[in-house]
Length: 88
Image 1 (tube, one colour):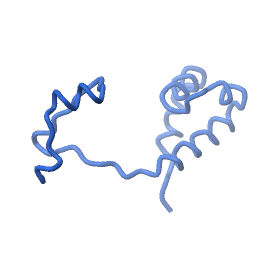
Image 2 (spheres, rainbow, N blue to C red):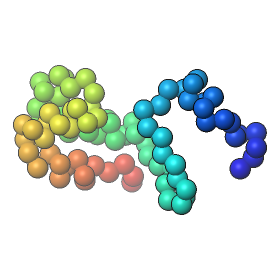
Image 3 (cartoon, rainbow, N blue to C red):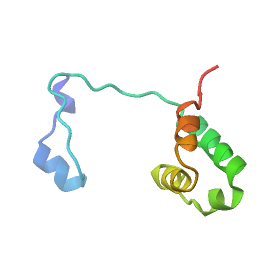
């Protein structure tokens, strides 16, 4: 890593509030290059297909939306969400 990218952690945290810090000492974490716009659109379409009213109530189609749908419709929703494809 180039030294120009290193910075004092204390200074960084003073300027950039973070809830969690993750130290990847063994280099096992990776950058996920996922087209999230596709995942979000397909999730929204699926939610709208099973309950358009509840889908519109979900401001965030992330975990809050998942939780509302799973609470109402059970494991069927989980299985469908796991099968959402983003590739060809």
